[in-house]
Image 1 (tube, one colour):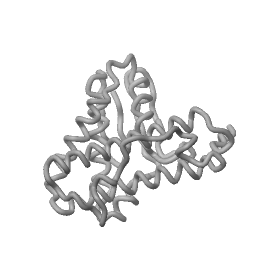
Image 2 (cartoon, helix red, strand yellow; image 1 turned 90 degrees about the vertical axis):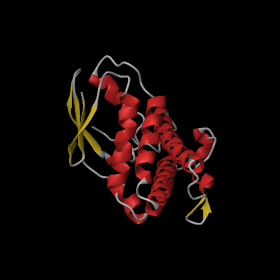
Image 3 (tube, rainbow, N blue to C red; image 1 turned 135 degrees about the vertical axis):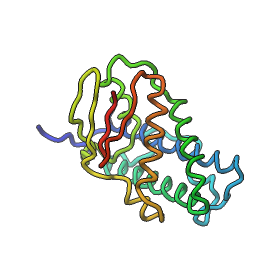
Length: 205
């Protein structure tokens, strides 16, 4: 099967990826709002905490270089992953007990984006997969090992996230803890649950 050339034309797959980036930006905004509400540091890594994300997002054809689509999208992903890791890592390095509050806020953000009742586990997974940022499709970082109406099992074949958190002075476990909270929030009204089996494996059933 031939790989799809993502740089050939601006299309639905690029909009799909851009939407994932925007969701990650809104998670960052959720953490910023929490920090400001609770009176945490207003300056992180030498800049105002509010500068870690943006309030509005231009259309995709403006947000990226349409002459170099793949590289532009990769750059957006790298940027949002970096800012998320630096923001959260800096906040919890000041006080690790803050992680519980951040986790709860991310869970509530997921609830606000809840997908509602789904007719099958496949539908629930597809909805979640449309929100999670796991590199580019060509990275093949997640592999579905079982898929049917009652259960979807997924194996992480490539860790796309921990590198950012290590550079930020934390570790990937923090990212995956917040990721799980987000997923549980999104699934909270779907009739399905998220279960982690270790080593990056999980199921929705």
